[in-house]
Length: 326
Image (cartoon, rainbow, N blue to C red; front, top):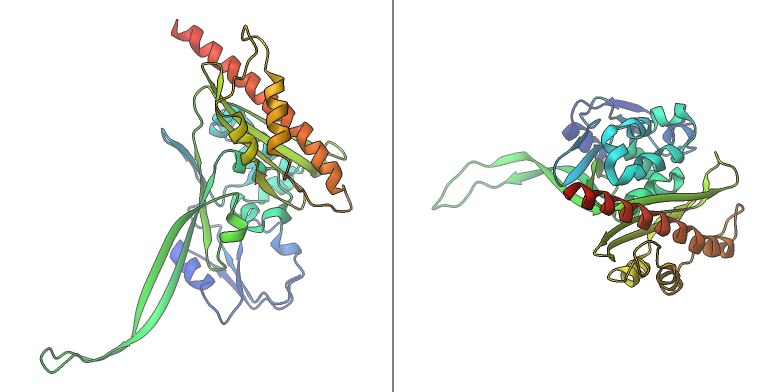
């Protein structure tokens, strides 16, 4: 319960919301879907800014990227045709797994999920990390200054209390968002670059039950060209965990031969070697659900399954594309 809530602002445009969030005398937070905020026990919050009227509910695409507005609900992401096609639908599947309650998915927003980070317990964070997604952030400020009257040679009028409105917009990788976002910044949208046409993707998770939060999850994106790994992306995450990109594994695999001789089976030895070398420093946290050792061992197995499936899908898509060109 927000017992000390004094102000409720229904923002009509982004600039108004930014100016409210930039205040330092009143603790002001964003109200998006409300699934997290309304359950907080934070008596320091004095004002909320409702974003539902802002034009941030879009899902659009162009030749290079897909753009998802911050106020898009998780259920809209699950249902969006463009996301079912993007990277073989891995983001749509991860979003559905983020909450098996449709009621919550109908309310929870992408921006809110990103803003609270690991506390959201959302599988969608890991998928966004593997897809090289970036969050577009915008901030605003209002400054009052007194202008002097010029000089003897160049006389002018003195002006008191002149107000300057400032804006700043920047992009941050979704992997680093929780560490780099500033208190007065608003997540406007998420930008996902389109993978190569023949890329394959896979999302895997482990939970105590099929509908429980993920003790661990893994998302892989693989692009194969001429039988070798051209692009590899691998991210791991889970409950109470920030998503982590396994860049060591990615570097180990890129350029390696993906298939055995004959091109009919995956070179699993390459995958195993890359995972052993690249995940040596993987240090997941422990909690009452699972130990760090369990997550570390399970992480290697889960990453192998994700990479194996993504490699198979990429190989199949390249074969289909080759037959269509013929």
